[in-house]
Image (cartoon, rainbow over the protein chains, first blue to last red):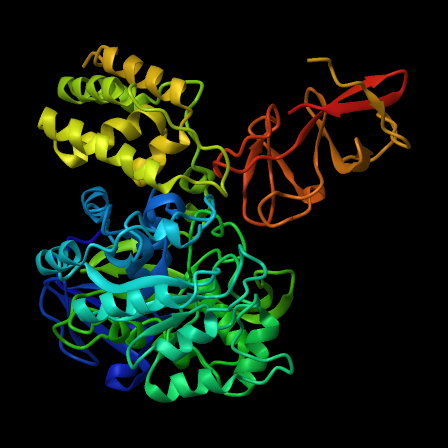
Amino acid sequence: MESAADSLVLRGAHVIDAEQGIDHVADVHVADRKVQFVGPRALAPNTKVVDVSGHYLSAGWVDIHVHAYGTLGFANPDTVGVYQGVTSFVDAGGPGIGVLDQFMVLLDHLETSLYAGAFIRPMGLLGLNFIEGDVRTLGEVPITRWVDFAKSNRDMLRYIKCNAMGDYGPGTLKLTKGLAEILSLPLYMHIGEFQLQNPKHLLAPEAFRIAEAGDMITHLYHGNLGQVIDESGKVLPIVRDAERRGVIFDLGFGGYNFSWDVAERAFAQGLVPHTISSDLQQFNVVRPVKSLANVMSAMIRLGMTLPQVIERVTRNPAKAVSLTDRAGSLKPGLPADITVFRVDTGDYEITDCYTKVRKAEKQIVPVLTFKNGKRFEADLAMGQEESNWFLQIAEDHVPSAAATLTDRQRGFLNALAASLSSVSWELSSAERLDIEKALELQDIFHQVRAKQGLSLKDALRSVYASFLDQNFTMQIGLLLLRLERPFALQRLRDVSGQRPMAA
Amino acid sequence: MTERPWQVLAGLRPDSSKFPARANLEGEGIVILRTKTGFRGVQRSCPHLQGTMMNAELVANDTMVRCPLHVFTFKLSDGKGVNCPGFRLKVYEIKEENGMLFGRSAN
């Protein structure tokens, strides 16, 4: 790995940078973790030269829709970040105002720059492993708390997300739009039904009506109820109107949200996403999404040119979430976030979220990533490792991490068990998720933590270490709710009484 | 509680049928899986989004079954969702006797 402060030249790649109008072979000069210059220039002494000829090179890719945190997240989110050519990503709805503090302390160590696309519901996305409930699960929208959070953490927030699905009526969307306006953030809306199969009132058209310039709609080419095309395949007039107003359309491939049939019909009529995002999460990384690169290959197959695809993972997303001061281009002075990739030719297949497969001749493969000048070898297999996405409670053994907890953490677990023993809870079914109970369990966690004077991070880690073998992160109230109560209390007591591991 | 009676799985032979195999039991379509320790039945489609369990994968030393659509994974012992709390798969005890298979509900 290069020392990040070294001068570095990436030599001989075909550079694509929409912002500077570059689409040809050129050298890229890096110094002090920043892009210095693209083009021919005399080398300073001790400059390291990396031969990347035969490859393509662009600004580091920006994925504005991933799930790093929570019930959909990964044990190591960098596996879908710098190890896949992505140097910045936005968690699309993982945290809400009630858990943004947990999100921030748990994911402050990533190599990939992580931002929050915060969810309107305090608990954040409940995930595919809990049914998104009715309007009751929306909970309160504490405006003052949001404003205070945004004041202290302006840089973290990139958009406010809600789901334009289910039978809530359009109130949720308008409420979220209102909050986004108060916070001066874009609104980001999911379209497409996948849980309630037959809502009385589809919310996708409402999303297109409510969105204003700079607001974003994701899952443009989904094939569920609430599509962008009508029954005859024609793009809906409300979609065209939204596009004319400057609404940004995002791809959001995901596990449910990309249909070849819809994509091909809409694309043929010129309806094209402005940003290409993956929607990667623990339930779709094995198939069908795999990586942002695979999604980009799908867009090549659909008919986009390579520069069009690259613009949609660099300049366009950086603009959409206001990151142009640090990402999306190779302009001199910007951080040295760089992706080196190949475009292979062969016989490939790209599957949508249903069962449709398309033969493809081109495949985009990330090779090297530089994040602030630090080098990472791309490895698409890492994200697919079961330990990275299979969130399993260690029921039959105490995770080894429990042995590394401090006395104070064990004392906290003991006090937590005592407090929890006075409440009952049960997760009876996904449909009847008791969101208020999850919030109550979270409140107890915070009360005990405050009494014990333990930091949020140490408290969260002590609970995770009691139940999880891998470094998954998850809303603490949801984690406790999913545990069977007698087991949870026993495990907390067992770990709290465990002797620390001998050094 | 009286035990549910075993019912024969018509048309299936433990030694010559191909598994996973479709069967009918207690009025429901199920899928019979062959595991390292014998046979187990599961409901025919995933309780999440109805992916067919005919394509399911046995994992964790054949103690769990995973729907290929969205990797929802269930314990074969009681059908509980492992990475999908709140979801539950119906599971069936299957026994082999006199060259035939018999089944009954397990949860």
